[in-house]
Image (cartoon, rainbow, N blue to C red; front, top):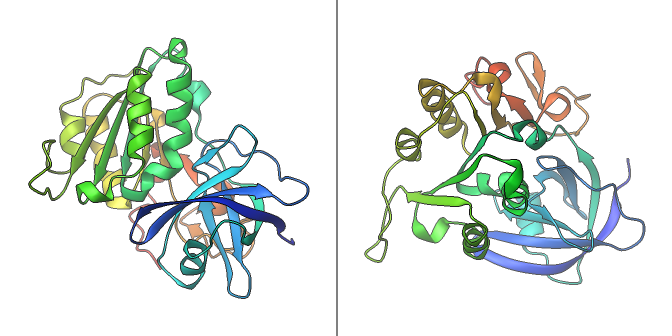
Length: 267
């Protein structure tokens, strides 16, 4: 499938190796993504990579937060406003936000994992009457690695309870220090909680275990498995994880389905 042509219209630097790009169509737009889905982004002359959607603007532009971790993402991070980029998609399953209506919503994000759950937070922040409570827990290695400080302030102004924790703190940090499971253990949770988790797999595994210990059913815990995605269709088999094909059956799956396969070593 040939990529559709998009152009970078904005570039926000999140850290030394991470940027947020806003991409607008140069001709016909691709279908609008649902929260949790991903696009394949093409760096011309180098290759393509699966990147989760971090947001959709009012005019339909697609927002992606990208970290430079290889040849393709290095090239994408280096793009500047006006540069072209190829896109195909959207692909994959999405966060079941509607299933959490009337319930307590908890979002747990570690590091760059805040990007794929940002559309979930935007949705629950914009419609408080649909949910019994709304809480977001954000973890990062250092205070400087915390993404979207402006968005976090906006979510709090909309009544979302936002807590942040870091692994290592500097002299100016006044918040908690430790693992994000520390915040989960301090939370009041129940069988009425619907949880959306994204981050490194060990973080999601231990967070899911902490949630279950507090009575949250595995079927109401959702995680994003972004491992080994390659063709976006599941045809090449590169994304196979046990019985799951992450491109096709994910990236969003319930912990009930994921808990057995996340222990499979990464290729």
